[in-house]
Image 1 (tube, rainbow, N blue to C red):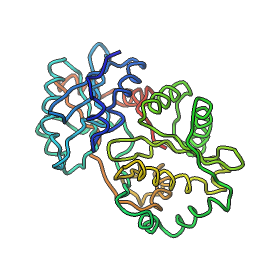
Image 2: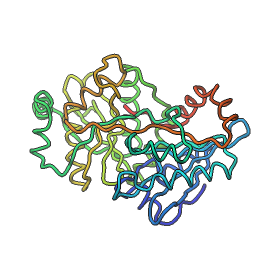
Image 3: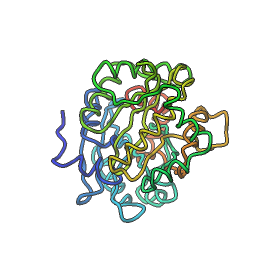
Image 4: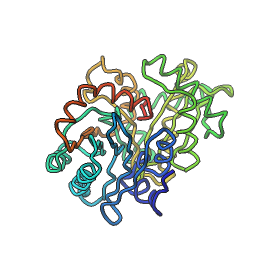
Length: 339
């Protein structure tokens, strides 16, 4: 396993714009799945990038999940310089391509992508838009920012016998997997094996990068939410609800507790996770979950999406003929789906 440089997580994860997918823990997870982790610094202390490498058809390919991690102080955060350096790294290694997908607005990222030779490419991470709450607001103000039906549903916790607790140990992780797989079957999204999720969830929880909470009724878990701790933001990464949980409106009380816990942790933002790029489209598979999230308020944010740089345009064009197979393989090998 590749050892991360000293202090890596302090800047890659715990800096304001950090992300769990740029952590040393994520590098360890991915190396267990056949990738090679490389930890690259472009500035002092930022930007940085966890670059994940694989060999495909005899050529190297690289992916920087939700990175590079950028500095604060200006919208681009040093993105242009980091992308130029990553393009040089791809050329030096003779890579088929190197993919990035930083959480940066399209209008901010576009000039930097163009200058470094990156082009729009298939996404690995499915989330291109989100809703974000400002946790500088008081608890009363956050509640007032919810719509009327959501406020009513949150207040049903005691009446419907819902209790919230933090999960502990493998048995709880297994219970979460059962709930999550059931939610996926009902909602039509892909879930992975218990072995995969056990590795990811336990590694991140043990590293202090994630917290799993359950909502219970009569001692039975009926809803769950896993929160990732990314810099000054808590990210609602995975959620699951059973039919009993839906009847008890348990997800509302659970989500509200996650928001309040983020404030107690000192986070300044709460990310409700993926919503559709076109919120008004009812045929979007994320439409139903987005209606739930929208009830909590928040501002709408868009990300630029994945972009590739390819040292050989000819080889890259040939490879793109099998791009759907490649993208699917990445997702099944651990590009984390959301809700």
